[in-house]
Length: 240
Ligand SMILES: Cc1cc2nc3c(=O)[nH]c(=O)nc-3n(C[C@H](O)[C@H](O)[C@H](O)COP(=O)(O)OP(=O)(O)OC[C@H]3O[C@@H](n4cnc5c(N)ncnc54)[C@H](O)[C@@H]3O)c2cc1C
Image (cartoon, rainbow, N blue to C red; front, side):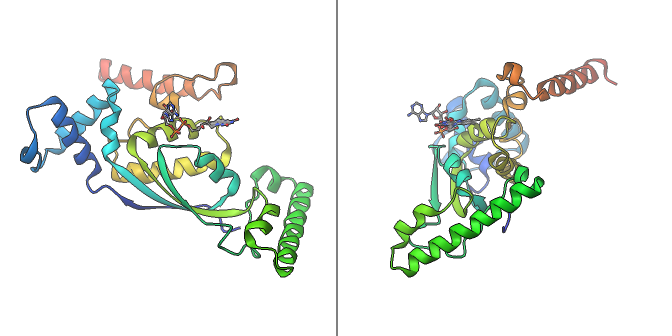
């Protein structure tokens, strides 16, 4: 088990400035070479917040972010690649030998000593079976059919900022599975470092919209968010 690793490999240089410039085209007379100049940082923040409040999120698509993700299960990447508005390149089980494959053990299994022993024993059995198939001359592309969902993999993913917001909205929520939720929070903290205003409202609906769609299945965080927001509002109104 190598463990989850997430690196922000590359991103649009000055992502917030690029988005602000695209907003300027929509909402001012600036165009062409007029967009080559700098925009004051405060104005950049104002424009991004205006886009967010208006729901004019197509402008966020001008900034993109590429992540290198490893130490995750194939179960996770199957969920990840369902996000169609992104580009992916994943380690191939056709071309890469998996005789020494690592695997992800869910925390619930780690906590249960009996389940953990049985889980690990099966992984060893699968390794031996895969190895025997390869030794018998079966091609990797066919031998891989015995590999588990737990099998570790690596993937490079490129999202634009709008699609990332959708990803964080769905996958930072407590209803998302623990592994992809962990990944989503790691990705969120990395993009917040380089584009804090673009992602200041990113997260599950309780954060991004101030509502929860889960009804009786709600984790209850919405109440804490509402209390915190009300506290902040009162501080502003009463100035204390
Ligand atoms: C908690 C949870 C449970 C899930 N359970 C299941 C499950 O049981 N089974 C299952 O199959 N999937 C499941 N999913 C996956 C889910 O259905 C989505 O496929 C996945 O979250 C990607 O979301 P998306 O379509 O919004 O993202 P993207 O594919 O990145 O799309 C982004 C947005 O673009 C628009 N869009 C993209 N493609 C189209 C299109 N063809 N037509 C119209 N609009 C489009 C939509 O507005 C969409 O929200 C689950 C997801 C979550 C978060």
